[in-house]
Length: 424
Image (cartoon, rainbow, N blue to C red; front, top):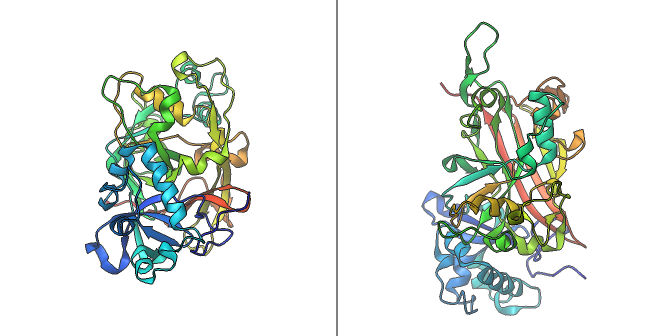
């Protein structure tokens, strides 16, 4: 099947063809900080202003015709409307942006109101995040971490193979790609016969993750069936859950991550919908033992999303590739994660963020963090001629991902962040 054609130029290597149409929230640069944020979709090197499209009466389907969802400063109202509205919007936008549809193509005034070059907008966190949960769903990552800290005899705890492990993170420190991350200070592991160290983290790390964006939630006390979970997931973003490994190692017993994680979590600006990812569905890893009935999916699938991490060391002109992984390595799927999250009656809400946990593959070149890549600093990594055990001040970390279709990509753009020195 030939790629879809848009009247907006889409280069072959673009992450944002008509097959994708990911959602975000942006502010036109021309208006500065006074410009009102508004929802948009990415097409080629442009952003389509959905508030302008709606104001022109071009959303004429039954669910969106009278809706104010695209006149909001976040996507939350649209997320809440659910899959029928998402499909209606996708169908309308694919038609409106197609090469043979004159409505927008031949209206110069409307095009000027609706289409903004990407380099002329500021991207914002696209939804109001009420709650953020981080899972621990990669078996390879779990095995490596367990081996590093507990030894190879029993690296993965027994419960890990029975349920998706997670902890509740800090929504207030989730930031948009491009936001600098200040090196955190805190307590770290004591040396023998001395108190804990206090100061800037000496083991600053990235974590290669993705995150699901919750659409319609559920009522308190009413779990979501695992086979209905996809209807409650709008799409995915790239996520870097920055970690201070030394702070985390000292604090995590007995309640898990806290200050070693909550200082910053970066997400990419474009939410790629599950509808756009559907052609890239693939079998998820076989689960042994077989999950309990509430986690047993009729369709046990992941998505084939190649993931890359690049690091540009301080003072270097170009970044270097440090690892390549794939979303398909996740042992627990996003549907299982969401179903487990609600099985006790916990209520999710539109805009909630569910991180997958670090996504590591089976081989050293596919490990998803420096903790694994350097084996907790024992095997320094060469990055563009510089040696790294962990991140140094000035280092920039760049995540990117793109599914490869037949003549097109469905991509996520990038998720970037630079490490700044600790502040007193």
